[in-house]
Length: 131
Image 1 (tube, rainbow, N blue to C red):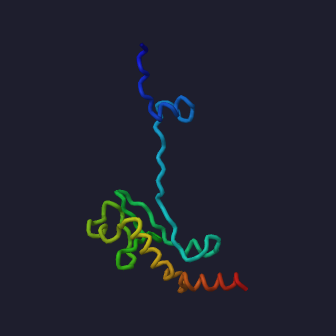
Image 2: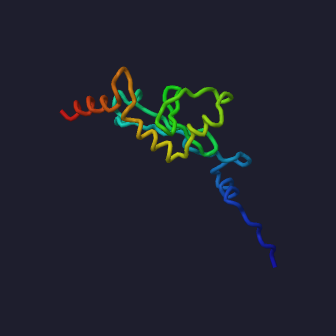
Image 3: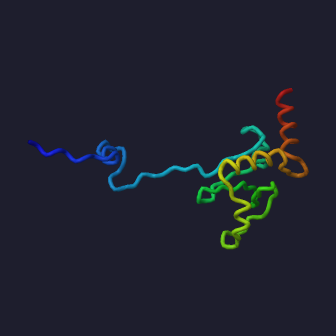
């Protein structure tokens, strides 16, 4: 009677096939930023009328733009360096991914640059595109 072969892990199989290097851990992949804008991706004004929803660790996300964070009331406030952030400030400016995206989507049409809103820019550029 022959001795049964020990079980082989998926990692060992991938190493044997040459898909991964032995002893080197697999790289992990995580989305860490989403762009929120009412302007199409190819619109020249999109970059200035975009809110970024960024991962901040511990399954918490922030809606940010130009060094400011959006709070639950839809107001922007300056984001200080990590060592100066108080717990109550963090509680008001960190959200689940879903909540951060909802806040950013709600704020996106109202972003202002040089007195014009994102909605103004959308109407101007998209109106020209339809002519």
